[in-house]
Image 1 (tube, helix red, strand yellow):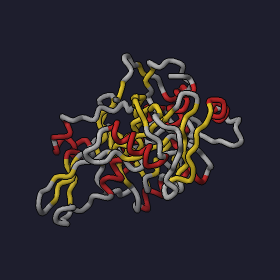
Image 2 (image 1 turned 60 degrees about the horizontal axis):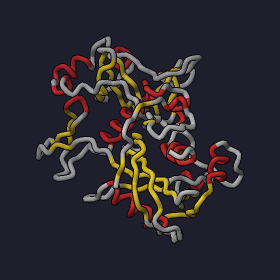
Image 3 (image 1 turned 120 degrees about the vertical axis):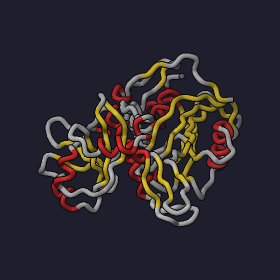
Length: 329
């Protein structure tokens, strides 16, 4: 059974604290986006068109999904104006993010726009930073904007043609839909749900290392995770993934928090689960290793004092799930 905490309140991810109250809810990196997504105004194509040319509107350029930031004493998102885009000959259609302080905010892909890329290169007051590293210099709110902008641009980049008939698709509603120019099928941005879970038998927690990707390269052990299948509840997804990856049966599942993860467009759904069995039989095709770790081992790893164990950094929800377990939440 999925159990949600009775009363939840929010904190900022900038705190990066080891929390001691099981009633706390997290606002992770990539969440806390302050933009009003403007569901009503985005229905008006003329309004969107006017705002995309308005001198008061703000635009966040991305290049190859890297984020433009200001390069100086106070790093921040590299918002530019409509006049800048016109001067630089940017001809890609901006995507409407929403309204912030009654100002229209857009993101725009300038990949391949040589003049604009040169203008915003290092040395001109701007630089491009990848979406992971950029969270080290941005406020929590700005990291939420990054998640939205990166996910939306990536979605448009890979949905230029209709999956039904192959016709070219055209952007509508400021970027919230692509409509086929032939069969008129509408396609909307999708978010892929992923469960991520720390399993415990009371005194130990179960962490694993996949055969591919960042965990293996950095010898890091993390919470087990996987995509939710079609026709599957979150509880069922937790049980299936833990059995597939570790050969462990789970009992009660408890919800902890969630995190947008724009690589490319997932929602990480963080849980804790009680182990019903303890004998590990991991999938060697998918996992490099799965182990039980004691509280002392994990606590020292969180403090960077365990030479034999690395755990994910605070950018990832796994870090906070592990921390929550250490604190007995």
